[in-house]
Image (cartoon, rainbow, N blue to C red):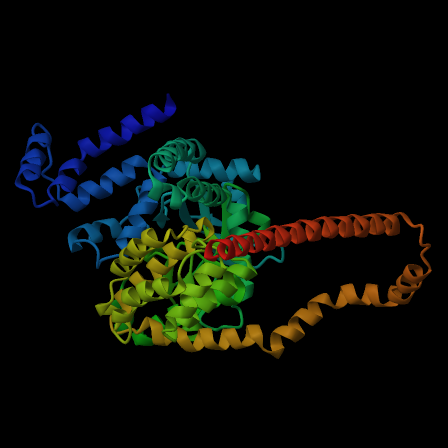
Length: 523
């Protein structure tokens, strides 16, 4: 019943804000345009379509807001008026009452907010779908003052998310059961992955741990700043971190006026992304413009500032190696190797003809090389790859859904910063260096160091283990089992040989009989 009620609510909101007409008017058929005018009768739809879409997503809750955030980075795929409105979802979601935020803080730390912070700004500086942020001043254990940002979880989020996820699970079941293509897309697994990430985002201690890990990973790179976490003031509903001062990355003209090298900034973004993915296997997976700023401080001028670490992606070593080999093969235009990797990984059936898959991939990708980013629509590439995947029954990998989403965000940011950016040539040297590290002596030494503690325990015991094995009595249980297996194997081999000999004899007998019959007929 809850799912039915939620589904009815979604339909009501779509009708209330005229989203049905917005979809129908995008078609060229006259009768569909007429239907759009008919369903809009009696409703006040004077507000611009982008505003109505944004307000509807806000009304439907955090999952739909996040969907709008992703769309806001794809100005190449939607009209400018809709993209401008959806951009407001990045950090301008209507805030909740500050009194509720203060009550949450006091409940978390069991003391008045005045005792937790030296000062606390009751007006939120940013409000997003999951939480909102207030600035404050904090005194640490040593008595030093720090300017901090306090992130407070929105109340009642778990119940709202559970309703939407329940509806998504039901819809995924329909898609999985009613469509062969839907089954190949693994909708149940994709929803399960989304479920995990959303629940992780509701735990601010987990987000703080993600931030700390990313900060350690990025320390030596010198391209991105990540805030320090104040662990004494972290709770599942409240997180306190260093206050970062920067300019939102969407304000490109302001950055350019301040002297920031915009083309370099775009290249640095690609480097950060590929470093996090292929070196660390731990990447920021919510990289919309509302979560990224650029520092203008003298010591860190021109560096990225990352915020909001509720959603991070992780990759296993096998995932990283497979993806890196795919990217490297793409950059070399070695489409045969790409096709072979798809077969080796099990993403396509083993019976797939490699040369056919190679030709299909070449047809999709070859026209897009050596072009600036402004001439490449990744949406079009993905659509054509999807059509190809249907033909070859490629299975969608749920663990890579976040990576695909983040790659779309990166493209959107790159398009905003430097339309001339060549994504392929920027990433190619990095991936080639990474591949050399994976297959060269550096990887051997790294793995040898990792296994050293195990070898240190094994080597002293090795002579004793060898001596015990050589002294083992022949009537040992394992020896008896081995002898029994060998005996059974010999018996099986003898039976197979007898069957083969009988078959050969039968065939030879038929040949002899045929020869005798033919000779008799000739005479």
